[in-house]
Image 1: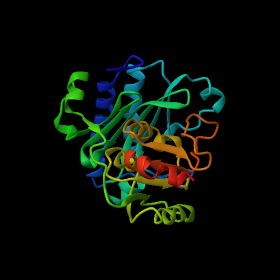
Image 2: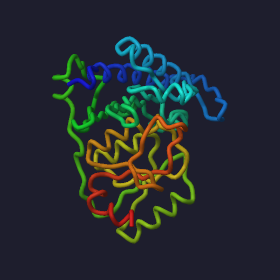
Image 3: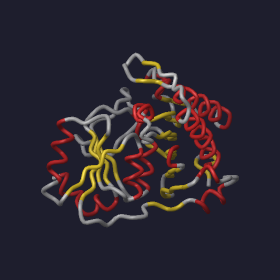
Image 4: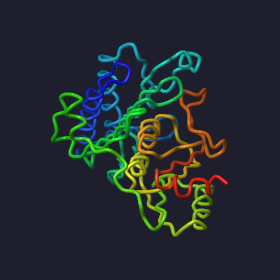
Length: 282
């Protein structure tokens, strides 16, 4: 299957290579931690993953620009001219990486104008890759390190369509491990009028994959996130029947804005959207 002439299995193999490198650093004794200008950490794994993804994308799609967390300073006046661009986060959840709790991901999204067309998320410690293609569904691959993905046929033979599980008695709410605020807590409290709830802390864009699988119901986020944090997970969740919308305007999130910071948002699974979605927006 092609997305604007791009071979999906090649993108899967790029993120697989980056995942293997990140996992190698994760299992080493030296993370090479630096502190960026915004006071957030940067490791060898961030830098090596970035290098792998950038070099391969530039080789196979030299005509498509790349925007990432580690190259965020491209002026909007230049970005606004882009019809297509790659939006990547070479290591989402660096704090979780440093804590060694396994809840970090690698994200690659292809954006057309302001909407994601393709999203691929790798979860290195779990040996999983999730991907979603606009109008073609969301999928999950397990034990990716043991597989040789040579073409699209092999890719879709080993991939499982999402969601896989939905129904449950209570609402499972996902919260950030490293970022919680009063507005998020207030929203969680409102859900108690709908059903019994359970809050599970999960790091990185893995939360959106949880929702896409049907393992959880809703992820409210009122704190700061950036476009590269969620774009890949956005299309995966959407193609699994879920949604992610601006908590103020109630409209679906868009990308390549003048500011790359996301507004407060709510992400919902297919099951939650169908059963409780209208109630949470009223």
